[in-house]
Length: 214
Image 1: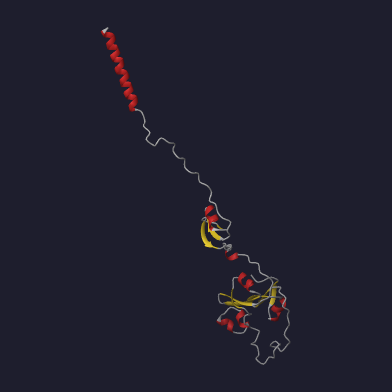
Image 2: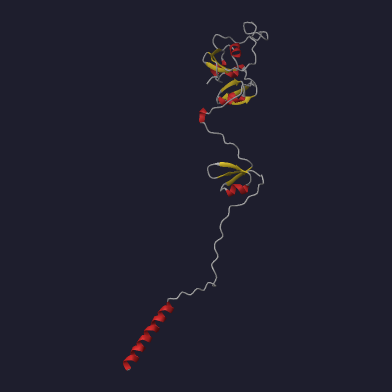
């Protein structure tokens, strides 16, 4: 009988120790007892249809957007108000340039050289800078140099007594049309572009190419 009681006491002690261990491992939730809120989903930015153009960039490319909101929604950074200006491609020194055949003569300069071109576009295409909206003076069509101040060999200075409309030999000067068919002509070591062959020959030049001088 005593042995049976001792066995019951041991079993009761074991059960008590087991319950104490389970109680120590229990996690207590003190968060309020309700479900945790879920994070709100991110929705795309809603923009109006207002047209207030801006120029924006994504680091390397520029693009015009209808308004600032649309630019930011696409991840662009605004760099200016209004539409983006077209960027000129960089062709270096060999950039092509298409010019019209309009005859509106200008005087242009490259370094120390001045030359008459049929229009400003052709002057800039040859790398010249327009300095006057008229033809260059005869003496200015050659490179500005002390040696060039002397008259070309074989051609004396123009006689001040020569009558208008005649050459130094008092022969009638050649009348040319305003047709624009550019040619490259040469006089000695000088090459020059003229609007047409008639104009070149009237100036004492010899046509060497039916295209502008390069």
